[in-house]
Image 1 (tube, rainbow, N blue to C red):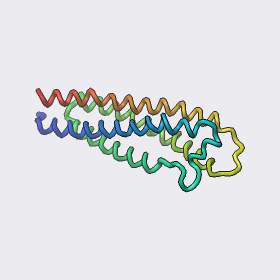
Image 2: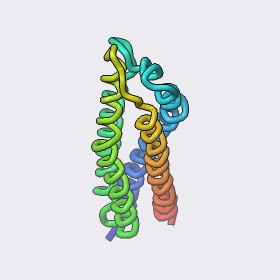
Image 3: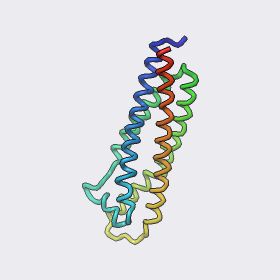
Image 4: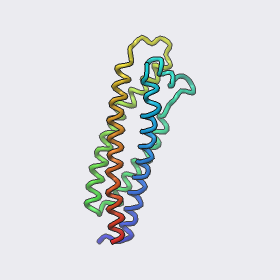
Length: 166
């Protein structure tokens, strides 16, 4: 039997993970709209944004934000487990999220770390434009997938509100 208290806890954790996901999306959209076009504009010159001691480096920010979000996402799944329809959608959304995170770890993170290294080398011979252009295009897809997952959480939040009210 599912109690009102159970639904309330499920709702709380689902709202927390949804809010953090939208916060993460805001940061991704800002980075994609403002920062990525700058450093991909004309490499290697545009990679100077990454140069030196004060160059841009978002690694700590993204690791912390994704870690917090993934913990809250898992907690939402745990606290919604007895609500089969919510649990099943959360598992699908988490699977998509997880696949995009793996793609990020295997492709995006190593590529940007390499671009950051190139920025700090004085002798740059390679034409990086095709690689940065591909990174930029694939990033649009990646961010779109993250945004889609977060919007997929909204109907679940509405469902839990309605469940709690009934």
